[in-house]
Image (cartoon, rainbow, N blue to C red; front, side, top):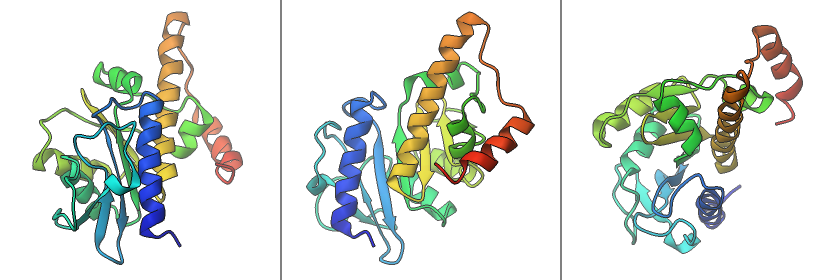
Length: 210
């Protein structure tokens, strides 16, 4: 059973990895984990260099967004809380800015099943038109994430959910990897998408291995 100490370490490691992988800028992105039985969320702080966030920097908030203890939580805490409210089956949320993926989607091209990992871990990618971050955006993202595990907010970034921090992180990483492949392939005739038979075969053979 993961306790608060373990999760604080995982959150700081996840946001550090996002920065190292070029999936967020120094002040971009956020990561959270919910303890549903204890009715609180741990989330990354605002204003700190994402390369150097430590476990002690992680902020605890109740389900209304009120800080428990010290620290200033991410400005997008409301989005995380709305998503947790809409998806009772997830424990972790990762918000990042995968440049290739966001660029493709904002330009009107939505990546689909082009790699086995994309098919198994992401499935259908959700898309939301850009609106200024706030209550309205939070509600829209939460609504779309009821039926998706990963959503792109155009001109901004991606919101990924998972049973664990690693699962939510991996979906972001897989999306950006596939998007880079698609972008490169466009100069050479494009990258074929899997057909329904291939998708079924992939799910049958890969789903227990990822």
